[in-house]
Image 1 (cartoon, rainbow, N blue to C red):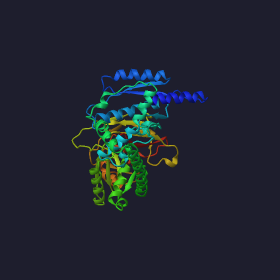
Image 2: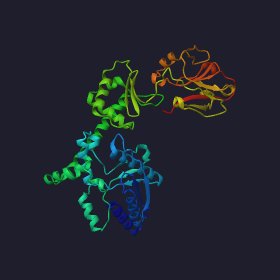
Image 3: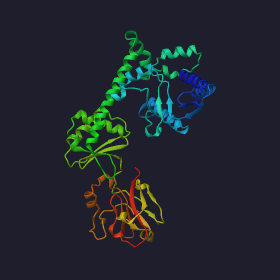
Image 4: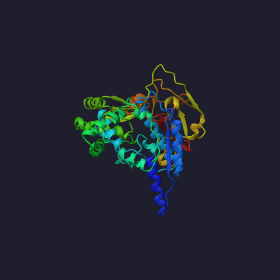
Length: 439
């Protein structure tokens, strides 16, 4: 309510001075967790519209059994909904009313949870919408009241005769933040009255230290990065072995965040460092984390999706396509799509197939049965798919793909290309076939 009132006053003064100011938007998130939630929505809409704000209310569903707890799940749902509303209304700046007491509580809470520097750095005055990532679409989060205490805000609200709603859950000491707010912070304030400023300064120092660590990690990342034709992010393991354990852990933590994944616990990070440093040169290592896997293959580290390994006893239904110019053939049972791209000029025709061949008989996608042979060129020797996969460095987890046939002739093998026997030229338009993972 303080932020709403202060912003309304600012808009009014700007307009009085002759400046064009767009109508501000107030966004209310209805979590559905309190029996009073419907009443709160009514109050928020009334107060926003009284001040000339546009208003948007969004209802979110918060799972009660979420892994991160009810508070964490509500926070994630809230910020996702806020980012979505900003994109819908073409909003560039999202303002929140976090204040100095919130900042102090966050720093202490993160310290008690054993968070690293990114955690105790707490909240910045300006930054990204938490957890929204690319979904935020360029929306920036601004906390204009972060240096203002709760006591000052309450005095402002009383002086302006504002009305506000108290959330009863804020008194529930079952939640650690509330316990800190009601039991711990008053005791600290009795001995260290300037504790808010002290903790805020500590948070700023932590943020500066983390910035330096990120810059170091970027230097190490660039030094170890392998340039790949498929643009995948890969790091050369032997270059990482020159780093000490702490520096390697810093690089891995940075890489995890860069990939949009959650920060791994310390014990898991230590195990990654051990395995990466101690593995034999030809070893294959798999390190699952969330929705991805960090893999060591042929002395290169890369993040991949969690690919399913084919079970010999599984029966995967065949797929049939009578091709008539389609640009894509989705094969969800293999979590991928075959993409057809027309050849633009003769110089790029290598490895392509004549259109008349594609149209001649139906294309049939089948699971590998074993013993299939493929050749790179029409005049080349056919060899087993295992040979080709190994010679081209196609990792084992990428080999669970369909083989495309016409009758008894292989037409296309994902990650290898069009079979040489199908590449014969008949003078017509030609097409490239490529595989795109949808995992």
